[in-house]
Image (cartoon, rainbow, N blue to C red):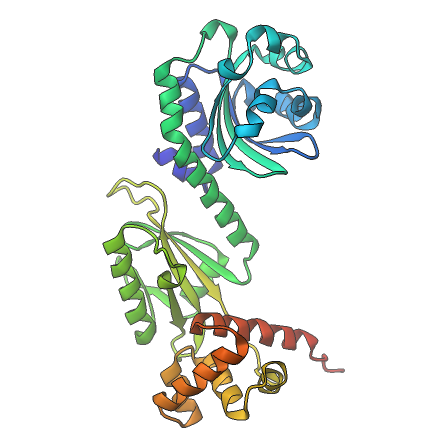
Length: 369
């Protein structure tokens, strides 16, 4: 199980997991495959055993015949969903498979006539599966082998979802920081955005201690989030409960952080236990933001001024101080802002302000030299 979750970020560990599980169910090959239903193509993301041969993978990826003539998939497709386990013996006989071009042109060449597959993701246009294939001689899959696959299927679904979310995070390298933390909340791995958080005086790690925000206000919110997560043992039902505002050392809002469990782990091994993501805010001039808010949402000058201050400070009390008003008055103005913008959380409001400010920055004319 550890190798499965480690394989989310390490292809070699995923390949090792596929090889070990393949042996456990008596198969000579295995692969994690992305299937383009509309285009009629497969793409092997991970391959082990005979499928690991580069020429075999190339043929498998290029030939559309394997998609249209795959009886195993075609017959299982109507009821297939994420977490399903498809056993070849239950969907097609050996005689039926021997009569297909899929077998004659491909499966026969890798000595394959039986398979068991775990579905990780099922969409109308795309399916991701972990498939193990074996010879006719290996016989039917027994109850123990099928039970093992059924027990692992939910974990494979979870691992694939993590992989997808991490890939999405890496694609957003400029706007999202990613940090993998061990059970003591110490960094195991970080992306470029995570490094910026550590170097930019937003997050810190003191010697061998846990990671923590630099600013005291952020630290209090972070510690409360960690306590809530420890009590629940899992993510909150309302995602907003697992979000905390992060400020830099000067007290300016730097982004919003969330923390979630990261699969199964073994205490004391130093493996990743949590995923911390930070939606970072890009510091730009707020010139024009106040005017735009008044035009778009009908905010009063006082409300627009408070919104801009909140965008910079991230905390209502700090924004109120900037505006020279009390917290009570700031709350009243904030409620009016919520009603006019149709947003009802500070986090959502600040994100909207950051997006709008970014659009304004992109539209400002560049100076001529």
